Image (cartoon, rainbow, N blue to C red; front, side, top):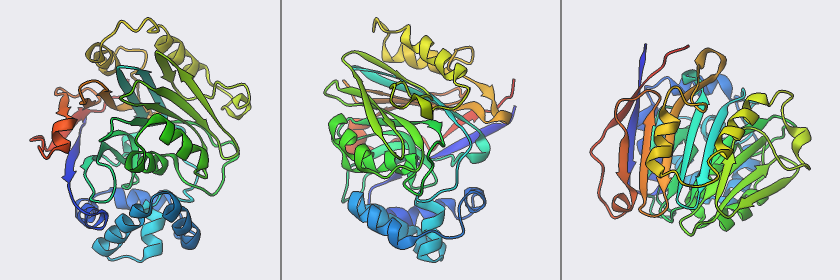
Length: 339
């Protein structure tokens, strides 16, 4: 039963210095070799820069910091970390439930392709946020200082295009959007590389799922509860689903059973982290094992998160952190066990 650890990184600085400091965390880690293996040697830096300047210019500053800290060219840093023009990724699984009160999500994939960092960033030029890193700059999921939560859910590589990865889109939303409507607007404009669902909620009680493909983006909304898994539900997009979506449909049916809304954040979080839950998986060898659970309460700004089979739940008063109260925890610990 191998343990795995995820360092908790807290930074309050300019985007450039956040990138520079992040380079020191990753310079001796395995993530650099992994990213070098799964990304292209170089990308169209000019196109990437134009797109990112339009949506999130501060990310270019963060890339500059990474570039300087790791002593590599701008193009190489962009290819490794920007999330632009990334080769097709293997299928990953994710399950989320969003209510007017809280958000809970499991991320399922393989530890081999897992950054293994949980970051709380407060840049000087954009919104503060907390979430799990993906390709260093991107995020699997997270929440920002305005109480906007977002998570990604892989659907398919149908119509795969040169564009922005879902995890970089998540980061752009967290850094620049204040509400679900802001996020929807941005996700409709971003040139998506692949088909993904984005689960969304904000402190005003707005909840939505954005079903995004490289060619069309459609939004699902509800007043009380939404579930989000790994297939499109809108009739206009279902042809873009993978051939086999039975597992995703089964998870969705299970999450739909909570439509009455009588479950608290803590109860739902405990359900998601329970290794016997229908939304917890241990098939890590086939890229479908639960790696982390992330939750946020819209009412009290409370983050709950832990790693698979971790003994200690990280409980963060995110409003307090935004006001300058650093958390004492340095890392999260979990256990990977194939079953």
